[in-house]
Length: 286
Image (cartoon, rainbow, N blue to C red; front, side, top):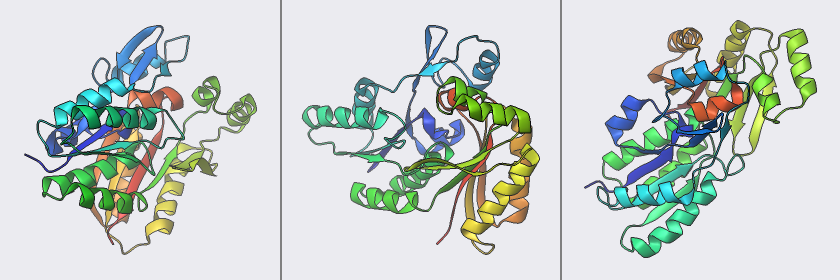
């Protein structure tokens, strides 16, 4: 029996093979497309989703997981581990953190000998995925819940994320940026590069092509970690595997990488950004 089960959700964009390898419990976030609810990663794949996204008239919406799926997962985890650590995306972005806290409170009564910790992650998307993989390895090595929680807090502060959007149309339709931003985007063909953490999303560059955006992302990586540090990297993309491969190759050639993964931006994330996003999450060895 494992000491700690790692629980997260599909916003973490963890490659399926790594979910299976480390036994990470991933809760599917509900996605609503033209009145029909899909479980992210179960009822619909990223390829199917982005194909639908280009055809639908009404923008898909997402719904935060209720406490129920978290509680079910905690019960399932109690059969394979002595405790659980649940990672959610920053509470500023969704109600999933609150749902997990409610489920933990219920679990305290239903599973009195199964401690559960819920952490509001300081990063999101592939950044949260890297954190989950890191702590899942610690759990596999037999580290205690207290040790895993402490290491989670430490690693979160070291993870950086940068990504470029191909279009602002989906953010405008979802009400996340003003219509004026989309007008500027359409006139100047801007491909904004942004970073994201617990304080929010922030634009850091406004290149006019994805190729220029990739160059900027690589420059930002160098600024954050320097040239001599060994990196753990996850490249992410929203239905643009060729650009992801380009970014991955450049990262691998320009940095000393311990590991480089490629992952798809899951439907629940792509519903907000649309197709064409490419980016990277990473942290350096201390």
